[in-house]
Image 1: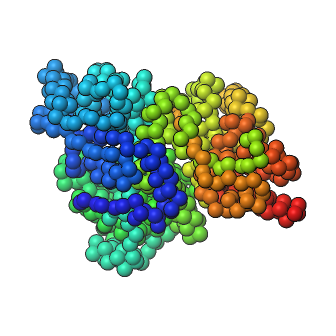
Image 2 (image 1 turned 135 degrees about the vertical axis):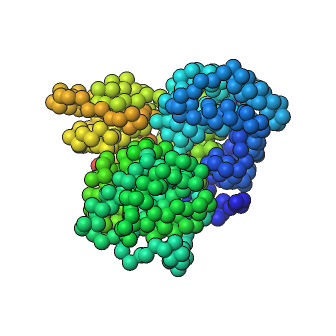
Image 3 (image 1 turned 90 degrees about the vertical axis):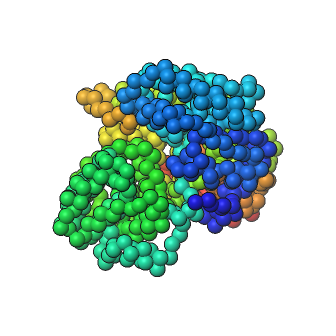
Length: 409
Length: 218
């Protein structure tokens, strides 16, 4: 869905001061020509970010544009294999694969107008286009994947291209790799105006919950995630059953990923078996694009759980905090960067820990309100799209003064 | 600041990963001993710019990691309880961090290590600093501006100043002391505990001090 939010639409949420800061930084960046290159116009997190980022940067006076690389099916098969191997999977790659990769990058570098001051290349697919850089330009590689345990041989190959960039950007420090170029960290963000995060009236929440068959007569514990064992949905059910001995409550496990993923379908079967016969456990398989439903379920929650065993950044935690909910999360990945014990939720290391913290929080309504309030403010300050826009402006400015730790602007 | 005026600045941070990480206390100790000052500063102070209305249990990144990832509460408590005012500069503060970790290692044999992915990752921040439109020359004007500015300049002058002026001093108390000769007020502001208060609470404490000073001196 095309969204055309203007900066002023965010004023009520982030405040006039934050928008003034963006205007100030936009002015400092000036009419710099910034080109973003990725591999898809629709679908996936990167396209979603660029759809929002590019118009906002332009509104701030930056001449930002976005180009999408083209390639045949075999190219995208190669880069899909690269993508998995860079995140640790085994891969045996042939010279043919490397040739396909390089030729497609070369063709795109000739096709795309690379006349820009700052070029941001997203992910491995277009990474080798840097061979065509002009020495007066700044090139930044924006990596959206976890590069902490890459396939060594592939990384050896791709790393040679990455080192030709002026800098790189990662979601989290733990995703970085040993590189000779600066590695900046720009954490992901959520957009408070989208269907998944916009404010909702009580009536709207009630209507959606009714439609989904979620009763709200008892405290509601919610976990939103793909049906994936790394999200530990079975552990959440066990924790819920421990809580249920003391507090009468309900559990919602809602997510997707079971339709086109055989593993997801298997996990969903296991979850349904574990929940069978318990009327207080709702297992909801949501189709893609159920943003409004997710929003309503999160808002209906008393407490949100994200008991992952492995996690990327964990934007569902961010989303829940934005809705003013205390969050109990597995102490892993980006969840540990977002949750602070007693401040906005609790980090847990076991299903017993999850059960205990759920009991602890659900028994203390005043604490729940305080954790929720802190979480929302924490997100407002650190994880909204306006901060992402700001970081991109700061990056553009920092690229002018490489190696300096204090820059007067 | 040579003249009597106080100019309010604001700063923005771009976080940069150093590529260094630690999976246990020994590695943390070694990295802290060798890290550049801006890395130590980032993990002890720059976390504060994330919090406006209240602060978490352990705002020092080292203490938070010891508590949440390493699950060594005694170490977390020792690291959190460092009195930042006792150290004139970052090198002395670094020495204290090293001393605490070394002592803890000796007192608690048996190595704890975190799981892969839960290591301590060392960062630093690039500060992009700019002058705001606010400039004041006395305490009345100062209080007026302090009431209305965003928390960003408060962070910059209260925390980031310590990189320039030494750990014991912030820009506000430095100005009150050197330009306005208000030593008692400066001492009071220096005494505000940065580890226990949010930026909004720090604003409120400074304002109380200034308002009392205006009331008693004028």
